[in-house]
Amino acid sequence: MSRLGVLGASIALMSTFGVATHLLIQQSPAPVTQEPTRVLLTWTADPARSATVTWRTDGAVESAVAQISVASADPRFANTAQTVNAVTETVALTENANASYHKVTFGDLQPETRYSYRVGDGKTWSEWFDFTTAAASGKPLTFIYFGDAQNAVKSMWSRVIRQASTDAPNADFMLHAGDLINIADADNEWGEWFYAGGWLHSTIPSIAVPGNHEYKGGQLSKFWKPQFEYPRNGVEGLEDTCFYIDVQGVRIIGMNSLEKRQEQAEWLEKVLSNNPNKWTMITFHYPMFSTAKGRDNKELRELWMPIIQKNQVDMVLQGHDHTYGRMNVPTGVSTQYAGTMYLVSVSGPKMYAVGDDAKSTMTRTAQNTQLYQIINVDGDLLTYKAYTAVGEVYDAFTLRKTPQGNRLTSAPGLPADRSGALSE
Image (cartoon, rainbow, N blue to C red; front, side, top):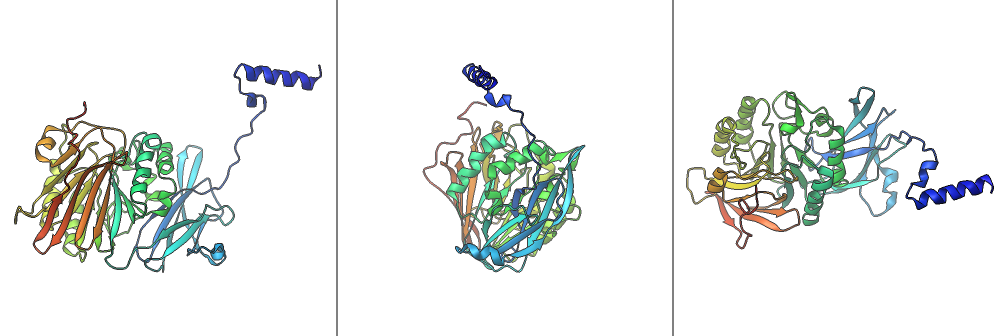
């Protein structure tokens, strides 16, 4: 038998016994590429007239740029796209390997306009992504609110964000209340977070605040700032973790419940007292009222809650406790008006048991349930719906804004409360 015949017989024999035939061929290492990855859309200025994009390349690139054009069905829009130079910084991945993170802010955009953009180095490009700028004034607004993703993000959180997108395909932004991942500087976990959201991260702006798992040894994750860019209008030293954004008649305030709490309290008072928007929502990680057993954030509650209540904030969106809970605290003027709604939720698979205090004081609770929330604001009406990971409505209510305060209407026919239905 010829050598060729012997080789063929050997391959056939190895295949018969389940040995991968490709092992016979020496594999070359994958070539190093400058493919843009982890493309994320955020806001650093007026959402009606600007947008910011960050992305990553492994290793250094000679240049980093983005191109943008008004979107069109005619593919020749790419020929007239504007090119914008990026700002680049290097982040160490390991002792011998770095990644380059790039940032571009697109300015002078038109409100309520669809744009296409791509990022790259001028030779190697991402695909074209589309997004739509916000309206310049109060128009209906829809966004998705996620509690902690944190663990098994690729395998378990991915289905939650995808189901949420199915139920709110035209969401104006996504809001993440901290603990997006589990280990602050674990690059693979951040990779899972971007994988799970995929192109949604590149086409729907994200508003995110850090949780305790974005910290290591008292330091914010080295990946946070290069990825999440927000307005520089917060407390000094808390850039990209303390800020506010006004979008279509709603003021969204992001706060960092891990650092400089007193400074943020003083800042929050100013931000709330000079607020021209009809609706106001705050997001931070540690909840004012804990839903999990054995937890309480008394110090934070005593510091921030009086300011929140005094200024009649509409909603506070929180995470951390890996359970679900809803309660409202009236302003004290009249119990017939809702006051501030305090929400705690979890979108990832890590679960805690609901505490007895939460069971007795909160209107709605759940444990062992992955959830996401869709919030719609339309004029004087706010509609809130919490969905399970399989797309079933678990909780819902509406707020109607009146001169005297918000009137609350709970949705009838909701499934039974799950605070004690499942084992701990």
